[in-house]
Length: 219
Length: 323
Image (cartoon, rainbow over all chains, first blue to last red; front, side, top):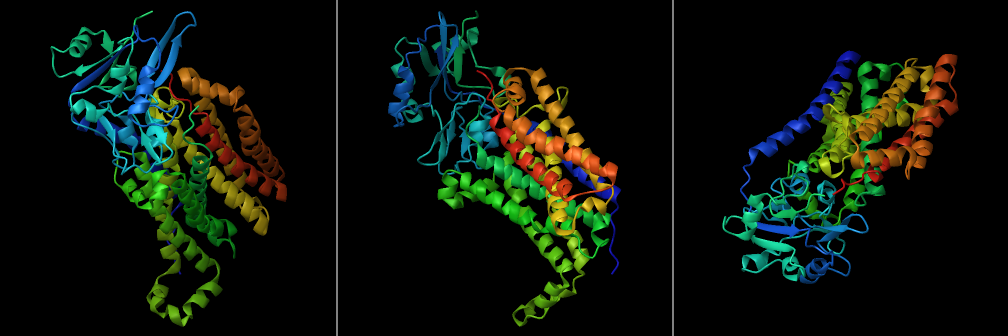
């Protein structure tokens, strides 16, 4: 029987071409995806004033209680910065990015961004692969071992939609957390953002945080 | 240090890579014609038959590692639907790779063992498959070897893109080939490592055990081996240097690998068995023109073990960006 022979050169060439195409294709595809969607501006803003934050952790505990999380688990995490004599506290929770990498890498449609800017998880669709936890540069996600799904801050959305406040804002003792409508130019949050004092955290990550802003005093 | 992914993902990234690499070796033997130089070619036989089971095992481990997806397996089907995710590409690649490689392996068995062909052909309860026996066996096998090769390259590269796609979250995983070249290093490194472990498994380990050192039959094999080890050394060096130059948590990852908490894994379980030992053994054997059981089995086991620990090392040394 005659066997059609593919020369070694052609075989290697084809393999190499496929490899190069696959490697080059990734950034192209990503670029396409990020250009394709016009991002509507977020309706809400939550500003954390680190010059007022004492790091007491009332927000962490309030979040835990409202969301019925187990002991020691919360959607908010405390990072201590600065030196021992002058510590600075950075409270980290979901930044509700306009370009959320967690939603990009999610193999299902479990993570999505609402029109009003809030990023949510549909836990019925989550398979629990933890890829989103790896892709979040703010490490804002936790894993619900009991249900096997990813979990994170949801801005206490039902309370907010009903005219209330997120638990962390209600609980903040030194009044370091400010919550309001970002789409109302008269609101305190909108003015603070417009003044340039409140800024997104690590904009160089390129995720375009749209709801969380921080007031950080330059050293 | 990231803690979401540990040993289990390391094992299935490794199994996917080695399966893909083994199939590429078999396909190369097939297309290059080496497959037909002997009455019996264990490299091609193993390279064609093991990728299917290896990747099935890897995929089962992947499913076992899921949270809700393990308890409610129908959720796995959602993973086919979101094409911006590298994991969705991976699920598609695995889904296509598994049947293609199984068919390729089956056809290779039929080709290698005429008795098996004869046995299947004469079964009464398989009479309905008569039309299949009219197909030209080797030509059909080549079609599946070709499709399998393309999918294998995809599977091997995907295991790397999966990590590099996290971008700024874990800077070490998204380190570029060189700081000014916008191609991530992980897919390239994992592709070369996949080919290397595939060769280690099929050419070194299995073929040596089955018929003695393969290098005695194919004179260029030691040199190909050494070239792969050289390229892999170069890539690993570039990865560590680029990470160190980038600074931040990527540099911290590189420092932990070179002289920190992961140094033992790196030097003793990866560099020594997977790079130094096989290189020396193959160089010695190529120079002497003599090959022993040690050069085959030893370097095969070393390369495979190092491939597994390389995946593990890359996973555990991923440090999230500092906030």
